[in-house]
Length: 190
Image (cartoon, rainbow, N blue to C red; front, side, top):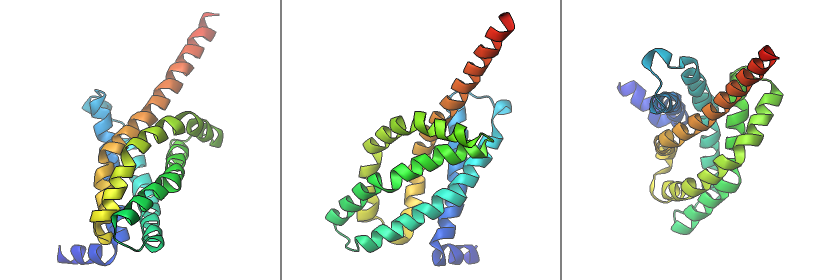
């Protein structure tokens, strides 16, 4: 246990990757339970996709963003924290949301066009919701949380946010499934 703690202290990126590899699939699982999915119907593949995406994409990109923003605004003041939070919303957040919908679609086996379509339909509603939540969370993170714990803090805060992303992602799947079933039904009856 001491060795694990030493590695996590020495390599905060690894700590963040482990954290996101656990928190993101947990969020996907919670989202499924919230909508009433029974244990025998849980989409475990979805949880695995969320784990892969969270651990191997989100954690490294967020870690990099936090390091860059700390260099751009090295001061530990409220003004610097607000600046970092606002800059994150106009730089990192749009890329993160676009990547989420596009790359998760590819992990689901969809085509590039399917990923692009999902970004087009889900980006703006998700971005608007993010603008209501993340500036305050980011400001708090940059103002009060020590740099070595920022990725972990954000990963904990993102548990509920990722439940929302899983919900938004599921809406797309349900919509496509329902549209496909309706088209097949119509073709069958003609």
